[in-house]
Image (cartoon, rainbow, N blue to C red; front, side):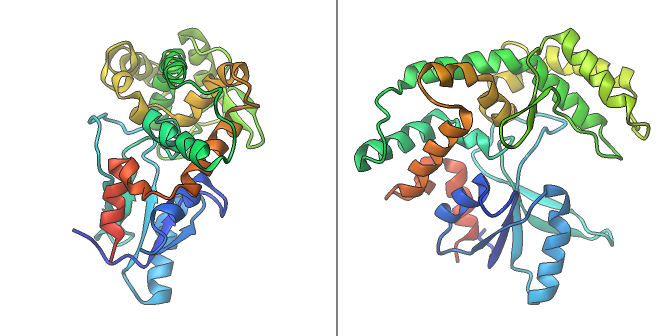
Length: 289
């Protein structure tokens, strides 16, 4: 059922991928505002509801790495948790995919965006072959499957205090951490380093390493649930960084350049982009007045 949504917070800053996509998706439905980190979204929603004296304030946030993988959803997930008084409230919705970048790598959205470039002569994308792209995408999936299991285990160990889940060399203008070596031993070594500076975790490093192996074997290895649903379950950012060599091979500067091409196609499309993705259509239907 559609809710009355006047204001929708999203993650990131004023030029984030989130706000650029949502501003295109919901131009007449509601006001989309950059909400910064997901960790402060509930507080921002509460303050906005009090300030505007309305309950028509919500947010859409990343799914991150859920503890239990429940499969692919074509709809956004309800974000309902207790407030500071213990009362259950709906704060908005959660993307069914790990993060916003997971949409920018989806072959269907990529193709539709590139079609816009061709139709409107925005840029020459004749170098791009969709079959080769999908092959590179699948290779990236295979190269990060162990690393995704490690990140998922770190997410589950990160309570009550915050524990960063990604590791490796800082890359690009946003200093995104992504490791060159992503085998089991290398991941174990990096995970141990994480715990050296944290002493408030409920779950120990040994428990986390055990969980890491279980998640990899039961969920992230070939043919397992998260592996099969990688466009939803794996990190879109990690997939993009794992494709850096392929992007360079086809003449793109880097994965940021690729994402900008896809975003430009989305923003310049004359189509209703809600038709590009069932989940986008679902969010549109929930927010429309």
